[in-house]
Length: 276
Ligand code: SF4
Picture 1 (cartoon, rainbow, N blue to C red):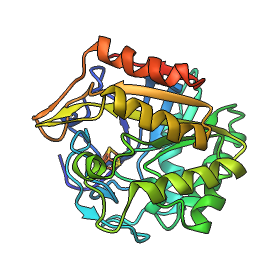
Picture 2: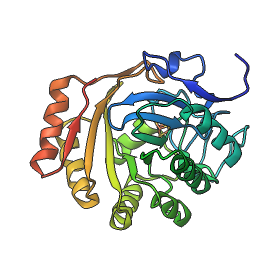
Picture 3: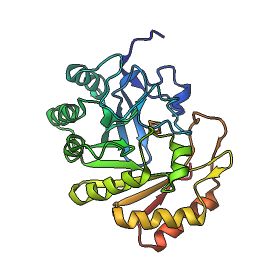
Picture 4: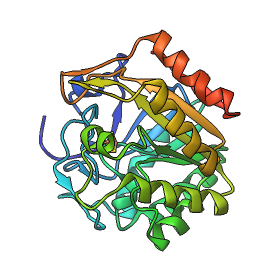
């Protein structure tokens, strides 16, 4: 395959992104059945190389090539015109469609044109009379920026990652950019929730990695108390279900996931568990 990006890649049935020949190289991908979002098309703003403020040990997109907190473009610097063409390819013969989500290879909110790209998606789906939810999967590390918060408020759905609130575990599991602290990210999420009227989901990936785990009862209690401050609409609990970046990352058994979820539910949180 050429190293040039593609506008659109049809997802392989296995859903194993690390096995996909087009892995991370297309601007749009899908349509695929998302466990959370229904029939979806994804948008990848970094088809050149993965740009992210994290390098999570479980990331199924491989290693972060550019770890940064600054607005950053990749080699291909995709434009509004390119995104529009990629959407045309992806949505040309689409039947049922529930959602269009910014996700893909890296952290979408780091792209300097993120806000403009949301408008492109909105305009294009409106032209096609598609009644879809437009959302983003984010690691929430840019919520201290007013321009990002303004952009996110235009969306219907924000799914924010929060795997642990224990500072040292955060460093081990998410391998964040050096200045990031989970306590600051939580504070920004609390502020964001107050002004965001769309659906806010928090996603938690439970795992074991070497001697570290994030699914003890104490982990659950700490996270639950934090979530009570954030007030998300729903909490999504996962474990590793695609090939992780590091082979020493292990899945958590179903019983432990349910036990973890119970702690959150007992505090009154709305929880969905995805065991596979
Ligand atoms: S935040 Fe997402 S894209 Fe970035 S390293 Fe973690 S799982 Fe991968």
